Length: 252
Image (cartoon, rainbow, N blue to C red; front, side, top):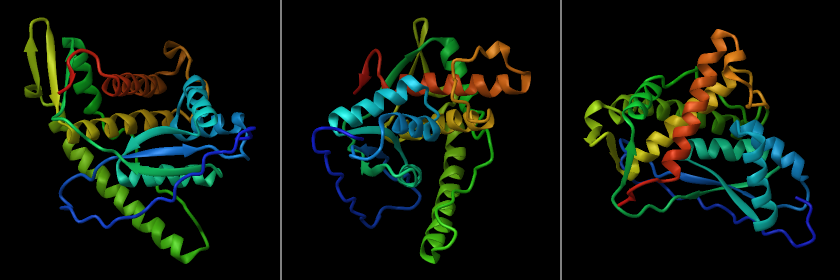
């Protein structure tokens, strides 16, 4: 974005061969947007709202981080989804990279009310809420067309894994009674799966609604066929924020 100071230069991402078992989920990655001297702030805000289904306030917050701090961590996703978002951001001429997330500790513990635990189980059971849309990178470059095919296949395979894991993540046995609350313990790996599922529910519901820019609509004013998706989008966003911003005991 135009600025008096020299913009921070985005690092060149390195690609390392994945030598781990294909049966395991790969580590998650941060999607990072870097400052540049070209794109206007209002344009960057618009792109963030368009790609991530964010409200204007959240999009502007990340835009200001890019402008003032030189970069902003936008989301954390699987390698396939992170690459997908990077391609989208670069398609809008923004400087974006993906960086692996470093994980420490044994896991996380969350304290939920019985109603919250019930809502989480019902929400995750809805995954996926829409048909996976194929991404388009290029229509003419043969190399990019092949890359597009491989990326779509990887996204479809990862989505199938998430669908299988969705029911396992929220089995009733995962919620332990503690007084009037339910303790939900989850490992780093499973937490990343949960965040990916919640984000997919939120974004897919937003797209079913027609990708509205105004997310402050009163849900009760919507037609019945749209109310469901608005509620799923809202609920997934609430749980996504909760799992990213720990309350209570937190990380072990």
